[in-house]
Amino acid sequence: MRVPFSLLPLRLADVVFAVGPRRIIDGVSLQLDGGQRTVIVGPNGAGKSVLLRLCHGLLMPTSGTIEWNAPELTGGPRRQAMVFQRPVLLRRSALANVIYALKLANVPPAQREERALEALRKVGLEEFAGHSARVLSGGEQQRLALARVWALQPEVLFLDEPTASLDPGATHEVERVIGAMHAAGTKIVLVTHNLGQASRLGDEILFLHQGRLVERAPADRFLKRPASPEAAKFLEGELPW
Image (cartoon, rainbow, N blue to C red):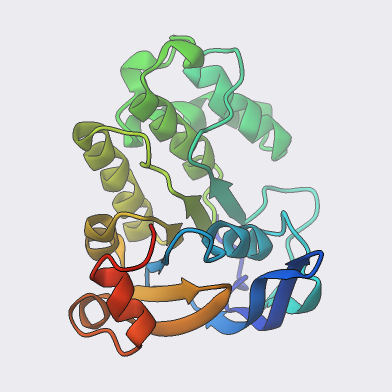
């Protein structure tokens, strides 16, 4: 059940993340609101994954502020979640993986199995409920990671290259699940190197270059008429991916 107040917007003000003298994120300010699917693109080393981890709270900024509209509730499921390129799964069945996430979120025991099975059904894995998570294919494992998150009904989902190592068929299935989660009301923030995926899943594009937010635009406009010379070079393949 949704709580009556929203985590969003998420506000970043002059955020810097530095390792020694190097600024991996260099003075980024932005606001993420609900509704739109936000896709982050940029060349290798631009800071995309680091920015995602800062937003999720896995990293703390060297300077600047990152603030949600409302705090997380204590004693319940986190209302923001993250799925990585390579999911970390337990040596248990697919169903047990989802049930364990619900247990950590203090979902009442009587509700866990039903909710877990429903999440597996939504991602097309209900028939694999009793299978070991470790024997699933790469695409199935990624869908299991999404089922584990979806069972918790997050308001915001951060995704870091979720299909980078998958074949086209598995990529299609993962994108289908991401689209369904968005349609169910979850805010999607996605890092990808795949411009086709950015076009399919993005409503707006954030373009990072050398740790700076160089451009923010609707996806169609960015992909057809980038406003910055750096983005134009990136789309033309002149910057390393």
